[in-house]
Length: 376
Image (cartoon, rainbow, N blue to C red):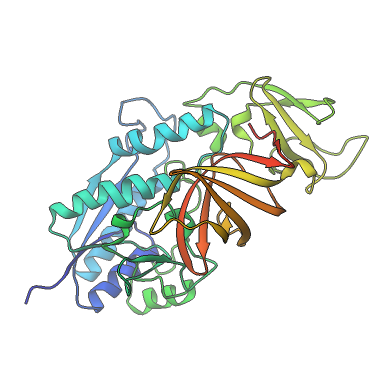
């Protein structure tokens, strides 16, 4: 009898390594794919433009680790370039959002367009019955339609990044480690003798890695310095480009103690028209909080639900009680009278009913008492 075939995304990290191991243990026919999304080996993007970095990219090191794991497990490893797909579907969007002075989340778009679309298309060419990823999430397939569920390890839960996946994208997906916590995942890797058992988790945006973010971004979007002011228009200093700052940011402002205060300063607003960055020495400044937001480009799995539910406005944020009203098929008005800090345009808002992730969209505007926040 033919085994069920699963193609797993093997990233070179411990999570996907253990996911592959568990699939084999469960009796699946497993092959792996290492996704190459960024051409750092030649210090160029796929169009031939220089990236201005000479160090060996973490992605190349990850590939070597993926090979070690695949060899240990005795599974075939395919190395596939999605560089052009990534540029067209993810990185171009990333740059366009920054040009609009918004704070994008490329990890969400990478899931939507690469890991669960371009990857799926490739896996189908290998006659896959399922695809698998090392994400911390779960799928409940007990009903008529599968449901995306939070992971057992709430601290590592990644449903926020998966919130925009469509129903047909999760229908044939397996998350083999979704029922485990991180500590157990590492223990399994050690017992199985996997080379990635003690490898640290990756951080930062995938195509930037550990590099300095503003330096990387300046290769594509020249910074436009401008005035950094308080909300009463008092000049503080010059900033080095609005795109390098996010609402609520404290570090990297270059403001020490002043004659008025020794408190830490925070970004509380931006004005794209005047290229002004607004700061205040108050981490709980009223301008940081909103009580209403417009969410656009919403993807919803199952019947559209309105009314009371919970939402996350950024990763690892606690769940907030919200009230949802649909404005049209792709747009939601979200109200939260308790107020929430730094609801930032460009970021994702994910919606939940208990442990079920219902869907998600992108924050377009935020308001306080009916007044638009100065976030863009």
